[in-house]
Every structure is written in C-alpha cells, then in structure tokens.
Image 1 (spheres, rainbow, N blue to C red):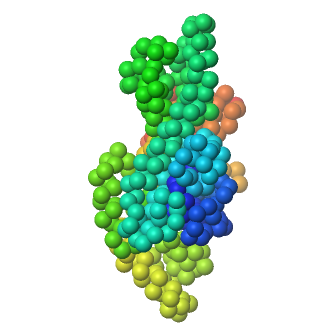
Image 2 (cartoon, rainbow, N blue to C red):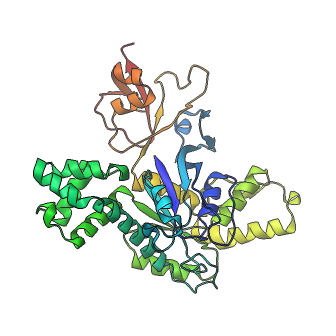
Length: 398
C-alpha cells in the first residue's frame, strides 16, 4: 500500500510529510522546494490488542505507546503540481507519473488562503482554496484522459478486427494506473457506455477517465494551516462546496513541534491525541512555552487534534478500507524470541483467513488447515472474512 501526498507548491506538503514521518526534508515558503519525490515511513494508529490480554507488546516494526499501536505505511511526498501539469508544465508529467503507484492520495491545501495558484505567498484569506481542489481534480482527470487516448484509434481498430473483450483490453491498457477489469466494467455501466468504443465521444472518454481516476486514486483533503486566524471560515465553505470529500483541518507545523518536543523528552505526547503533558517546565524556554500554549489553545482545543494522524488513519481505514490483523497463539502470544504480539499486518478489505496465512508466509498458506480467533477461541475456516483488530492463529499441517 502506498499513500501519496500531493498538491500545488508551498501549501505545506513537505511539512505534512515531515510531521507524519519526522524525515529530514527541506521546508521553505517558496515554490518548488521539493523537486524530487521522497519516500518515508508514516504510521497509522490503532488500539493495540495487548491491552485485551493484559500484556505489553514488543513490536518488531512500528511502536506502541499507552496501548496505542502505530503500524508503518509507505508515504510519498510528490513535488508541487502547477496548472497544465498534464501537458508537462513544471515537470508535471514526471511528477504525475510518481503518483501512478499510489493507492490513495492526500491532497494538501492551504486552508488559510495565503498561497496563490502558483505557490507564491499572498496575504491570508486572499486566495480561495476551493480553486485548488478543482485544480488538482482537473490535472488528474486530463492526465488519465491522455493515458486513455494514447493510441486510441489503433486500440479501437484492434477491438473490431480481433473482437477483443473491452473490459480486458482497457484494463490491460490502463493497468499502470491500477485499473482492473472489474473497475472498467463498473465504470462503463455507471456511465451507460453500452455502445461500441468507436462511437464514444470526447465527453464519453473524459467522463470515463474521471470515473477511473476517482476509483483508482481515492482522495482525502488535508486542510493545512488551520491555525491561521480566519481559516475556519474557508473550512466551512469548502465542506459545503465539496461534500463528496472528507476534509480534515490540519496544522502540520504544530504536529512537528509536538513530535520534536516529545522526541527530546520535553513533553509527553501521543500522535493523534488532543492534549500533551509538559515533563519539566524548567527545561523549556519562554518561546517554547508560548508556542506550546498557542498550539494547545488554537489547534488542539479547537479541533481536537493537529489532524495529521486523523488524515493518515482515514486514508488507510476509510478510503482504502484496510483492516489490521495481529498474528497470535491461543496459548502463547510470544514469538520464538519472546516478543509479545510482535507483528500487526494491514490487509485489504474482504481478506480471508487463508489470505492472512499467505501474508505470513507462502509455506503457511500452502499448509493451512484452519485458523483460530484468539479472542473468541473459535475455529474459523479459510474463507472466513477477517475483521479489524482480529488476533488470529493459523494451524498448519506441518
């Protein structure tokens, strides 16, 4: 699973990326600070199963704080896109190609309206962020259309001459965008494109491209810079104008400040929580205390969190509908090295017990006999659909 952070320049993409990963990236208030896609590890937050068994886990990957388990995911920071990126403006095609492998997109916008369409700094509330939502949709839709139309006449001719299956042929042509036969079929039915592709109009092709983009690149909007005074007015307006999107208010700067302070043992802070605890006030400078007070009053108390963790969790568990599953034994939760509940895996929705067995190891999948729900102590079959936060033991013939 890959989540990509995208949007126009200077809206806080790299700040969001750093807040989510604590990666060392360059951050500056001018366009094209990031000129190459960067990969990092972020984490989704779930209730850890260890609490249900009165034990303390020892994660092999990720970490656990106060029975909150943080499971790693891949996060990509895509350089800023500008108008006509789909035509190659500003290395747009190169940057768009970096989005190909993404399973979901986090669109970072400057909800304070202090960044114009080219990424230049302007007075707060002087640029309507609704334009940025429409801009990215437009660029992605025309990019998909360009891929769809590439060699279209030859494609249609081959369909007729060889009597090819339209679902298979289109899925093959668009496989690089993660388009499947099922997605093609549902999109064609929804748009009522029941006539032969040779008769499809330009509007038909565009609508198909748009529909395929929506399905294969689901998107959440992170309304960054919510701590700027007056931003909540734009937030309410945006939610009314784009009800089809989940829009989460964020302050990436605040999240970085809190995570760095926690990293240096100045505060106790669990990402995604609505408060923090100062460990030793004497270790903090007056400016640091003022900054923490500002974050508490203007972000945490107003919005409940900084928004960063909420965005990541929504992308994985709501947009993509993944489930988190722990391997565990009915009589033993430790692995061979004594680590308690060391692993937690993220699986696509409708994953079965057998899918989970193969996720653990091919040999385990091939020798699968049955599985056991460790919480209920009930045996389950290979076709049993797993639920979020299940703890599952696999029994094999070996």
